[in-house]
Structures are given as C-alpha cells and as structure tokens.
Image 1 (cartoon, rainbow, N blue to C red):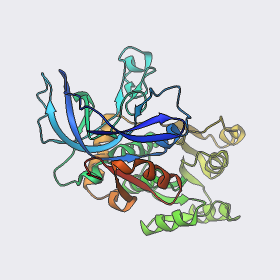
Image 2 (cartoon, rainbow, N blue to C red; image 1 turned 90 degrees about the vertical axis):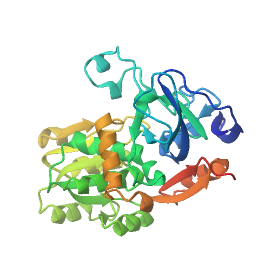
Image 3 (cartoon, rainbow, N blue to C red; image 1 turned 180 degrees about the vertical axis):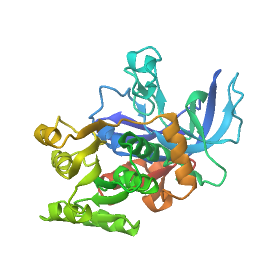
Image 4 (tube, rainbow, N blue to C red; image 1 turned 120 degrees about the vertical axis):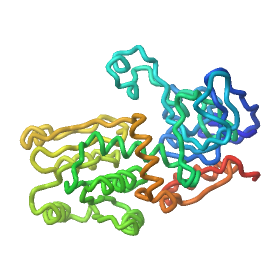
Amino acid sequence: MKAACYMGAGTIETIEAQPQEPAAGEVRVEVAYTGICGTDLHILHGAMDARVHLPAVLGHEMAGTIAAVGEGVDAWSPGDRVTVMPLAWCGHCPACRAGWQHICHNLDFIGIDSPGSMQTSWTVSQDVLVALPEGLPLADGALAEPTAVAVHDVRRAQLQAGEKTLIVGGGPIGLLIACVARAAGGDVLVLELNEARREFARSLELQTADPASGDLASVVAEWTHGGGADVAFEVSGAPAGLDTAIQSLATRGRVVVVAIHSAPPPVDLFRVFWRELTLIGARVYERSDFEEAVALLAGGMVPAARLTTAIEPLGRVAEAFAELESGRAMKILLDCQAQS
C-alpha cells in the first residue's frame, strides 16, 4: 500500500507502507478519498513540527469502505461505508469529565498527532467511525469532516431562522458555514476580498460583498435595515476580519471565532461592552455535528461536488498541495485507490 507522509523541511512524499491489520476494537478501512485542508498546509510549512512525528501520515477528511474488523467489533462489517471523526480523547481531564470530550486537554487529533487518512488502507478504532448512507457518493462523503466543523460553528452561534448572518472569509470553511447557516434559515452575506471566490459564492446563490470596497458599512446597514448583523462568523484569520465582524454586529450580536489566528489579534472590547456583544469560540465538533453534516451532504444542502475543485491520485500529493496553496482551488481530494 501507499501513504502520503510529511517528511519535514516542507516535503511531502508518497511512500510504500505495510497495511496494519485491526486489533481488538479496531477496523481497517480502504480509504477512497481524503481531502487536503489548511491545517495540512500548516504542517507542510513546519508550523506544527512540535506535534507531528516524522514521517507523518497526514489527512483527517475522508470516506471509505471497511475492509476488515478486529475482535469484538460487532456494530461494523466489511463493506460498510464510513467516514471518521478524527478525535481521540483521554476521558480523564476536566473537559472530558465535564462532557466536552471534543476539547479534551490531551486531545489526539488523528492526522496530526497520530497517523491520518492519506493512505491506501487505514486502521482506526471503531469508536471514531460514522456511517455514510448508500446514496451518498464517497467523494462527497469525504467532506463530512469540514462540514461538521461548519455545523458545530452554526450550533455554537445558536442561529435562529431569519437572523442576519455575516460570514467573514469566503474560503472552503466560510462557504460551508454559509451553506449550513442557510439550511438553518439564516439570511447570509459572505464577505471576501478575492473576486474569484466571491464569484464562486454567488454561483452557489449566496450574497457577497467586498470588505475592502470602502462602503461596507453602508452595505451592511442596507442589508440589515440599519440594525447590524445578528451573528458573524470570523473565518478569515486576519485581525481586520475579526474587527469587521465585531463592528458589523447588532446590539447583543454574537461573533463566532472560527479561524485560527497566528498571533493574538486586538479586540475592540469597548464595542463588545457598548453593544453587549457575545464572543464565542468554536473548535472542531461533536458526534452529533458529524451526523448532521452527513445528513446535510446526503440531502444536497451542502453542494460537495461543486466545492470539490479537483481529485488527484495519491501519488500526485505534492502537486495537489501546491495547487491548493496557489489559492486557485476550493477543495482538492486525493484518490487513495488510484493506480497512478
């Protein structure tokens, strides 16, 4: 079998590897497709070298079919179509004891802290499996993980139908949040600097605006009838994006911080105080988020095929990473069973 490994020093290669037969409580999954995300790019740039163990098999967005099950696995069988919720928690820390296992203090994010899905065959605990329905193409199912991120973000916002919903940043996660928020009844406006991304968002029938146009305040005022947005999602990762989200909110509005900022950004706490705003953190997902994400994909509420720019064979992983980093692609999948 083959595996795509981060080798350090900005290098990712496809290497030959041995499949791992499942132990008790484990399953071996033939990985059909796995996605490349921004976190994978951060790893390639060396930003997470303190966490990864070289050579590191990357990948945490996937879909595939169970090939074998270990002893004691009764709920799953070979041939079952699955995705993986790539979180393993300790069960002992304060977060776990409080019921928030997804933000465990000792969280193993599979695909970062331990081997991930960019391989032909992947052996994982049965506890991380999530079923995929028969009618959902496996390529679409590979977007379950990023869609679960968006579902969790919208859930954290407590979004209500009809609320003015501002998305700051029109990249893959921003557009997934926009689609999930729209499915929840939100009136969505996407702010994005890049015209090509704004055009793509419009092709999904989403309203867009350029935050650098100079008249953003009037655009938001017209859209909200002068009241401001009820909720804003900061997905840009830029200090200016966070400030835009805060400044655009209505009285008692909520801002959900989704993006990982490379340095602590300044926050206008006077604005937070003056309008009684709520600042909300949102990290990864819970199993219910994953299950809802699969339902949204299966129901066509999230246009996975439209969001997938290209599918490349696993052997072209370096080229696929370069294409995603160019900014021209929205989502790139690796075909882990392709021969070339």
